[in-house]
Length: 126
Length: 110
Image 1: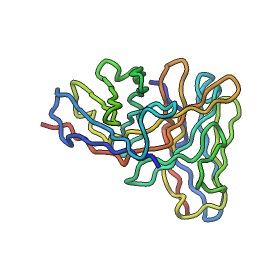
Image 2: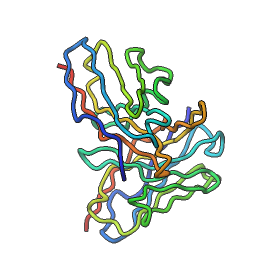
Image 3: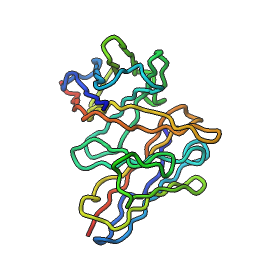
C-alpha cells in the first residue's frame, strides 16, 4: 500500500524559497503511469492545486503560481519535491502531496488523486 | 485560475439524503466528470469517487455520484454523523492544462 509523507521546514521567511519533499513508500515512484502532485490549503479555506510531475520530469503548474514553482523528481530516492520562490504570508498553508492517476474511458482521461500525504504546515513569517 | 462551483453548505437530518452539486464547464466536468473528496477537520482529503461513480474499495455504497452536462453531483443517502465533513469536487481542465478543485461544500448532519 503506497503511502506519502511530506517533509520540510515549517517556517520560511518572506521573500525566501519554500522547499518541500514528498517521500513515497510501499511502492516505486516509477511504477505505473502516475503523476505526483502538490496541493495546498490555507487555514479555513479550500484546496488549491500547485502542480504535477511525471517521473520523466514533465510538469504542469497552476497558471497563477507558475512563475514561482519548480517541481522535481528523484527516482533513486523515491521522492519528488516542490520549490516555491519569493514567498509571502499568502503562501502560509498546509501543503499536501498526492498521487494523481488517470482513468481511461471513451475518448477522454479523467484524473483523480487517490493517495494523499498527511500534510505539513508551512508558515511564512519573519 | 477558474475553479468549480459548489454550494457553501448543505444541512440535512440524520438518515436523510443530501445531494451536493459541482458546476464546471465543457473543458473539465463536462468532458470527464468529476472526482469527489471528503475532508474531515484536521485530516487530509480522502477520495470518494472518480469519473462520476467509480468508488475506491472501502467507500460506502451510501455514496453515489453522477454527471449531467457540466454539473456533477454526489448523493449521500442515510446520512450519519460521520458524514459531517467538507466535500470537494475536482477535475482536470483541458483548456488550462491544470487540475481544478471545487470551492467546497460543508455538510452538516442535524
